Amino acid sequence: MPTTKTLTIKQEKNLKRAVEYILDPLKTKNQTLTSGHKINAVNNAFFEMNLTRKLAQNVKGLNNKKSNEEVIARHIIQSFDPTDNLTAEEVHEIGRQTALEFLGEDYEFVIATHVDKDHLHNHIIFNTTSSVDLKKFRWQRGTAAHLRNYSDKVADYHGAMILDTPKRNSYKKYQEYRRKNAYRVEIKERLNFLLTHSTSWDDFLAKAKLLNLSVDPNHNSEEHGKVINYKLLDVPQTRPARDYTLNKKHRIYNEENIIERTSKNKPEAVFALGDIAKKYADHKAEKESLPDLTFVIEPWQIERDTTTGIYVEIAYGRYETGVVKIPDYMLEKLKDGRYEAHFNYKDIFYFWSEEKGQKNKFVIGSSLASYLSGESGLVPKRKNSAIQNVREMVAALNILSARQVSSEQVPKVLGQDFYDNYEIVQEARSALNDKLYRANEKLKFDPSNLEQAAKVKALHAEKSELEKQVKLFEKQLKTYDAALGILTEKGLSDSVDIEK
Image (tube, rainbow, N blue to C red; front, side, top):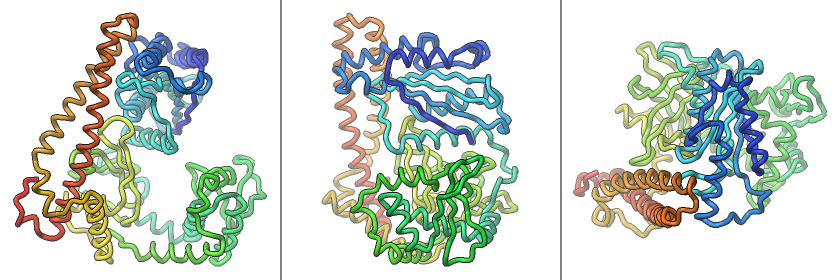
């Protein structure tokens, strides 16, 4: 999978310099490997992005940040391994699709694929001001991870093979690996627990001792620099495990990352030193008692089959659709072409929404199993299923209780009209976005046009009001769906006249 790195751009001169650098004809086959989105000409990208930012200042008011603090653009570098066997044109298309899925349709960007080094890599510069609502792009704690996941998915799709291509890994191979490397699995279990329940490097070290985990940071590697050796003191382990061998893609268990991660934990949210051993034992016992699932996925349920896993299309709620990846180590291919999937109720999967932009989220194993088993008509094999049923019922009842809506009232209060209206609202939303973008473009290139400026401000007010109504609408729909779920669980849906 490609690696991603992001740089911030806070000054116009730096934006101009960065755009010129990535468009260098010597690096991009005479600019044949360059393109833009919502940019009329790539060589004018700096000029057009500046116009959009100034339009936002005129329409929305000046930014409350100082000029040297505002992030005016972001520069993404997406690098590929030479062994990927991708052409420069394929790499360019992967970058373009990654940017579109990550940013959505509303942000200007220019992309250039460089061929001047031993590995192909994309440079993507995007304007942090939306060309539609003129709002700033929100870069939050998890945004870099979202970008990485989009990049992985698009790259995986481009490397997709036909269905009968062997997987890189399998459930049986993974279980065999776990048996042979049980100590590595246990080390990571304890480290992940400590990363969540430590507030500093010293706190991490003290708590590691109580979990019988030796942490020796006094080692160096020619390739990786300073490394940590980990060893379990209560489980047979002949050789210590170095931090970079525990997670080869990201060195999340080295000293630098541990210090950064633990410093973000709030003291009141972590377990005390004296409680850490008991709390970890409780954590292990709970995890081992959780239900396991095994069920079959039919070929028609698979949206894309790659060497690293399968992508299954699911509906998240009633209207939001997208794909979830089930990785190869959870799959075993059957002789008839179907896959047997094995995972836990608490396993986490990443959901890529079809709606452009950062609409992605995480899906727990219980939700994915419920959807897949319903689609295939099969009931997953499970243990302790009654426990999970109670948990799901309690969660659904809490939703209704918080909104003071009973299961008997909901069908009378809400109905099919809400879903019909929601579709109409979504169509109006899309049409308004298009209208707003075209109006912004006219004013951007003719800022002195007072009549156009008044039109743009009116359209922005209309969009703001529409977005408020959409949020209220979605809350009501979730309430309705939760109620229907409870009625179905209780076996009352047949006695109540509800059209889904």
